[in-house]
Image 1 (tube, rainbow, N blue to C red):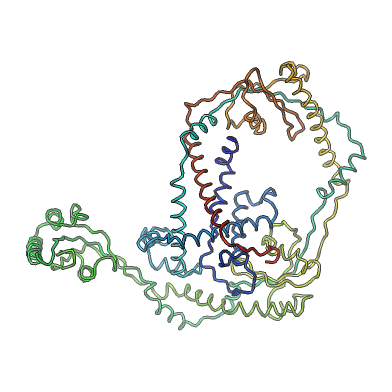
Image 2: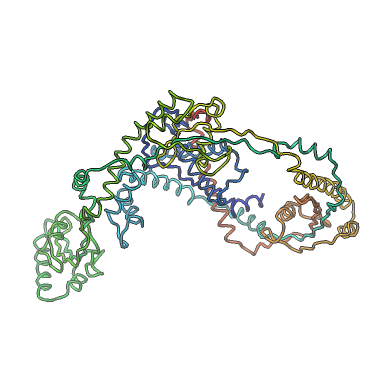
Length: 625
């Protein structure tokens, strides 16, 4: 149990767990140019749909991140494509049920916090300062509106509040921490003896080879493969054929002039004399006297430290830092933004009392020129026009591909599109157009593979739509025995070595239990004992399988305890455990912290699973999407 916990809180498994928990499936700002409502939803959670497009996008992101995690190739142990898609859909269902709960419970972040989050994002800054023009431009380049982006930030912030509330209140009981530390710091004294037969002594006849070859025929076969013809429509290609009038570009620039102007920032100081209705005249008299002293040459900062009744700025000479419009009360702001640099204001009355304001510097307030933005604005307009055209183009292509289902050439010629042919690929290929899971699914579907029809429109990420049809099919074929003969012999050799080792090892374990010693066994096997001494639970230089077995053995009561296992090489290993020592004083704080993090993550995951289990969920079969 301890070893399982340890493995789950360190190493690549931990990264996998964290990754699965934190997959960012939120698809903010997704504007599909094909419209919606025609496809069945991937799932419905409490009456709210998760669209097939949401699932496709989330699945594509998931596969991409898994591939990156494992160097470009997803291990077969992660299961087939249908299993992975179902896992992703489960994550989307969990997230939607969680979001619905959060909205119902009124988790939220305020305007001030949202504003600070956005202003702190490096991607929206220029020269270390938030820049409104950069903010607007970045969102436009990604296809997001400020409103949609900010709504998503609010949603993510609310979800973060919920998660923080669970993870930060999670705790590990002192007894559990003590027990975990005791087991984690435990060392075990082991000796290891290996038995291995000589592969040269293994005899394999032709009948065995033939029998194994036929029994494992799927392992010695080439997978079925296809070549496809396809037409690809992309937003970028449609954009290239669209011209934009300069007058339209300039009109957009004028309509959105505020978005291309940075906020004017003023750095100022003030002196405050608090006043109510009854003592306003007295406060005015005092602030006027202070102003006269400043005009006559005394230091504004020194007088602010002496007289200002603003506890937040008085000790700093009245310094208010940088101020934008909309932060201060109206009368204060009007006076501040009417000043010239180094100018001292007349007394200013606000609800707090009477102020003197001194302006130190002005920055920002610049407006980007039309010439500097012209190319981006043209591209923006071109993208909008392309989005309106691509729907009609895809719809016309779909109609023509349906009306002439035995070829894509007429559709390609009519709309001046290139008809392309893929390389050979299988169901799990990951190159070229076959890197898209939806392409592989369509290529091996009954309609395309068996009936020879053109596919329906296949919508991919990055605003791409593809139509495919079968070009050639290559069925799975068993490789000739002559081609794989050595491979079959090697596998049979290992199997026989393992069976022989297991048989001898099992008998040896019975003899050890009856009183024979490991030294006696070593002499019989003419093999040397590997005395490892006391080993640690995470000791890297020991074979993982041997180490795991050593830490699964029961603590010796009288004498040593033994167990064995077969290695992938065909060798059999006998492990002797003679002593167990728990070093309770050796505290591995990193391991304890990892345990706490794993438990808090588990509690959060359990909470999300509980919410989705209580939700009314309807799933569409994946083969119908």
